[in-house]
Image (cartoon, rainbow, N blue to C red; front, top):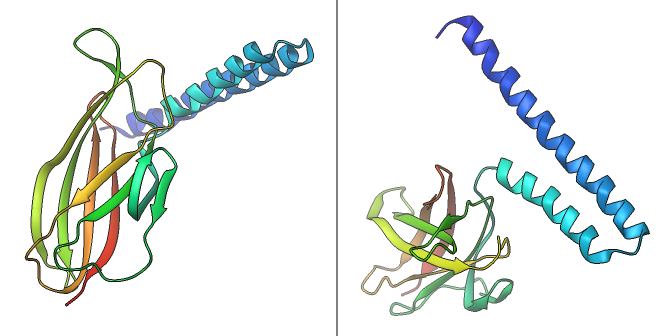
Length: 189
């Protein structure tokens, strides 16, 4: 690659960022005018278009990945106290991804879809378990939902007591975006 090519890449990225910033400020100004005119729904839709520009431009990002006792939906979870897991106890993880893409399901509706790889590392840093496509999920959605969560369950029955880290690679099926995250935990005697 020539030095001219190397210079072109940052300029293109800068111009792309400038274009997104223009869309965002334009939509914010439009939302403000709509709000002043009393058209609250249209004002929210304009701000939503600005948020969509940010969403589309951002990498796949993990906002939150926490150990939980239970989870039943976006933002609806009971955080786990910091204590070792019992030998036969499931390890539940609540995850909030951001910046994912939307695809189409077999009926033409919108869909959010991920594949997740997992590796388990012991306290010495040794990889003791690897699972490619540990979890695959497809969720049909009517709108471009941004409030979305994953619930991961690890069943490590028979694993020796110790401190572990579960490393995950979340792969968006509708783009080339990926995100890594890790969750440490302990299995007691």
